[in-house]
View (cartoon, rainbow, N blue to C red):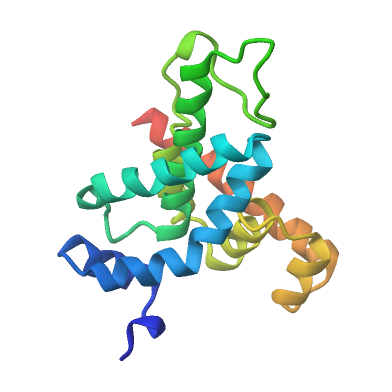
Length: 179
């Protein structure tokens, strides 16, 4: 089977054991999504590209930490969001710097159960159709109309899938905190 037909998870496992071609396929599939996400949060093109490079360096450095039960795309977006947060912390957002929209940093960097890696892990435990709807909405930035068309359902049901999926995610996180 050609690499282009393998799942992201299969490619990541191959990349872990040294396949540079598997990395190239993953990069080609997701680079534009990652850069688009970064650009939606960071107004500076130069900073966006710096963060983009950092994301793939972090991916390379942490490839051994990838667990096969995690979906690759949410894991990659976790790395991306962490890279953006690192950049915010590094620059301390002075008045003359370009703001990064949509990010809320924990006050005084307190430890929280909503660690991005835990969130990606828990997302893997959400039912597939709900997970797909959540990813389309929050990772791909699709409208409810787009989601309903992709899932062959109504807009109302697409909203319900997302709502139920987010409720399930919150429940899983609370349960993990109890243990």
